[in-house]
Image (cartoon, rainbow, N blue to C red; front, side, top):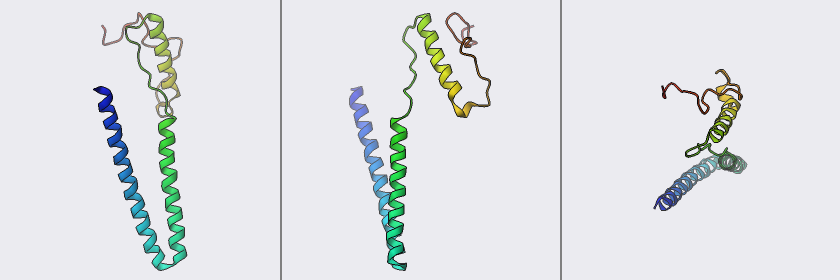
Length: 123
């Protein structure tokens, strides 16, 4: 049942994205036809540039989607070694994040939450 819901959601998302793409291409053609009334060369050049820009944006989004990092999933019922490996992977990813440059960095040897340490919520 869950797989069927996921497939339906993916299909709906693809259909919505295709309709948005068709809407954008329709308006690109309309703008180019307006510019073609001014000068035929201006219409064909604007059509080429706008279609190329649309393709670059679409291919960029596809590339970002397929080249994104795998999600870090915490292990179910972890051993202390698995928990430490998970936290080390998590800290590497957080320390590599460019948007979090202003915060203090934790050393990988002494992460704040490892097996046996107490977090504020656990106390």
